[in-house]
Image 1 (cartoon, rainbow, N blue to C red):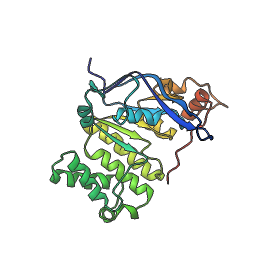
Image 2 (image 1 turned 135 degrees about the vertical axis):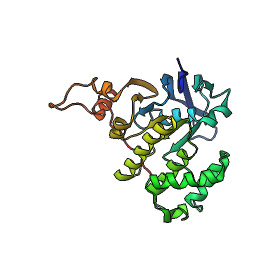
Image 3 (image 1 turned 90 degrees about the vertical axis):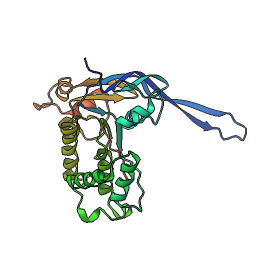
Image 4 (image 1 turned 90 degrees about the horizontal axis):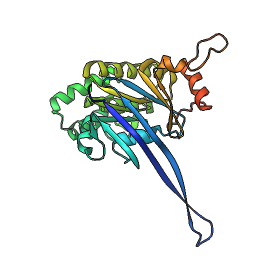
Length: 272
């Protein structure tokens, strides 16, 4: 049996909030916030695996742990057999991350930002330049925008550049943290189509967090629903829908499943 693309075993992460009292010499109050509690899951190679959860459920913490930006307090995470703590360098070579709050050099153009990323990953520049152009065109960016400063571009266009940067290095494991937030419906379809293409052409494994239930249903082979730091359901989209009975004669949607299991509605992150 081949090694899973991603293996998470009994992972927990707790943050400590400090809150000082009003009095001058009052003791500092420490409040523990459990972001993840004994989370276990396995993602197969070439799988598009979705993670759904309300704001504050632990989704972003999970992505940061997989990206080696955080260290788990307990448990182990392996990416293609490599331990994220003990083999951090090997893991970083295999992954890339696209985040809803992606950072750029705002005075640089999309091409300059992507060139910086290509050099950082040691890509041959002749190959990288052609690949940048193909990816940006595939995502619906117009050629005349390639050399415009990022600060003059709309939020949606900037997000497309973030997606292009994530795809540029053809990562073996691609972490997509709400990649289509802030995009119009047509742009969302462009990104979703490219996700499928990356999986088909580069044998990539993709972990996707999203607030878009239709997107999760359309793209994901399996989905984990996480709430208050714990996985409360994990199955295929169709398997999850079978957990909820028909409503008013209509087949249940993933949104029905989400509300039934968490008692909450999905709220999309606000993007400036």
